Length: 405
Ligand SMILES: [Zn+2]
Image (spheres, protein in one colour):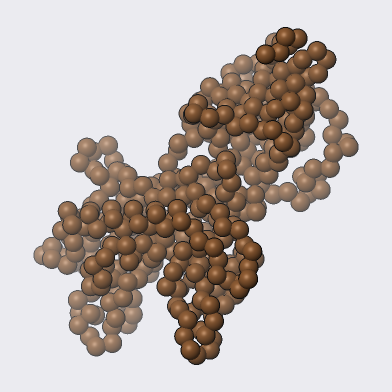
């Protein structure tokens, strides 16, 4: 393709990539004023994690526990429970795939982005009989009470005793309301749930509507809490695109609910079908942050190279947040790519800089997050035009195989 190609160099620059470490500053950055130099860039800012065309769908690992009393008559039988929950999860995933435009504020121009996360039921062990569904018979811990003297919705004993792999799996507990509470006049066996750490309890399915899909938004809401989202009708939910409002379930004839109600997933309303860019930024920031709770809950599917496509950078591009890349990257001729945080490259992958392309690294780390080897950066040149790598701060390349020759 390039007759005058003077050679393809694979560079290790200002980095600690073993075995050969080479430190090369190819261009003086004094004329460049990156955000980091101004002290305003922060790799943990949710603003940099709005899902875009490079955001792969993240799969949250979940398992399901049916709590029953020792007679085994208070909860689903295992087969019907599995069927019910599989349907519920499938519907919850469908809703996540259909993120809706925000109702509020009226007349808003808030973007509607793909949520780019879903649920996947997984086994916690290597046991061939482990399919991620469990049933427990426990007279003391099998029930849910959300009001009154015996209220136990915040109680963690059940989670401490029965959760499995809760550092990497969301444990969902399906509970009946306590029959004694249900028998009293004032107790309502409503559909309800609560998120506690990486687990959640859900109740009301056994007493209420038998349609599994009717519990899908409850699941999405509670998992939203696990992923770091707050109730969005409140002022301080860390998002400017979720306005304060009276949190009406639906529209009525009386104030304050005589206006368009919210449809946000993190409010209490009849829809719960919208997540804003800021909310998705909070969720995906967690997915991308090394050692964060959110990241530990997702399937690690970014280790290996997916050759089904190549990421082509054909105009000046800024990657302000961290990313787990699963494809090779090619930066086209005379195009600049700016990287500000951490980028994981898949095994055996490379970043190719075509002649005249420039890769700017600002305190950036390029690595393979699974401790596998990737091939590094291929710097192409043609006649006297070369690609360049320009480093600022403590940028490093880790886990790559080839050094400069
Ligand atoms: Zn809530």
